[in-house]
Length: 296
Image (cartoon, rainbow, N blue to C red; front, side, top):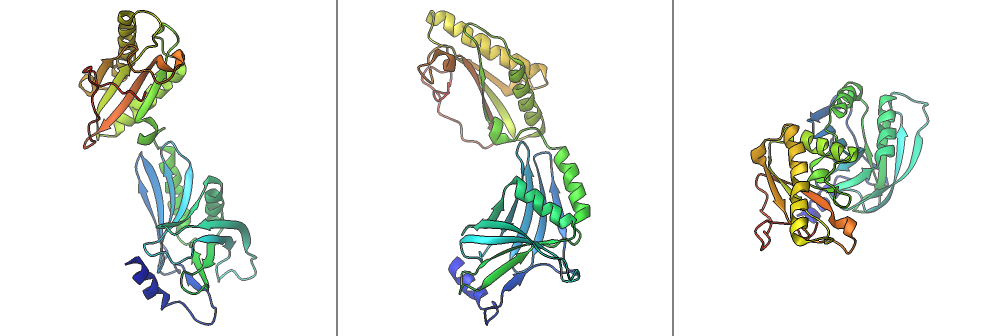
């Protein structure tokens, strides 16, 4: 189906070596903001091609991508230029180098630095343009991002990014609190991590359970190690509860020295935290009945 779509669209490319240009004009250039505490997306529809998106996910940096349901550009290296619109003659284009064009839905993805350069160009009234050979016959395809109506929505976008959570789900779905030998004390860094987990869980109603698994090294008796791992798990669970997490969301489990993750004792003195969302497949339980995570 994708090949048929590409062949169909290829019929509309200009002949005689002229570039096929895709971009919004004054009459149809719009930017739309999709905002939440989890991510901010500033979306611009590029008629005939797809969309351009500035994206900032909680806990990550700004990025930018061009997205198309039927990729028109051939994979390889394309050029990126910030150029003046037609109503600003005499303003020289500013080359920004090359970009990688993929064969996926997101044909062009830019890193944080390049994304900020694009945003700056749009605020200056310029039009970022990606040029690359077409899939069809090697003639140029130009995808232009319009600056019209960008400035106001970008200000809203910046306000959105200032209200993002400090972390996203992937960053804290599995977390680890290390402990010194024989210790159950939390460090300042541990508390910051736990505070971030609390912030996320409070905002995301789909998180339905938090598993807190205490572990120890194998130094000492098995009975003492089991008790120490339980104390470590309870220290973490108590901190979460003190910060507002409901007790019935937290499952505390202690494993002693039963599930080492390496031969280094320091790696095994830990409490693991795992978040479970509604609809997640339950993970396999260990034979001891505590449901520990042998992978740490």
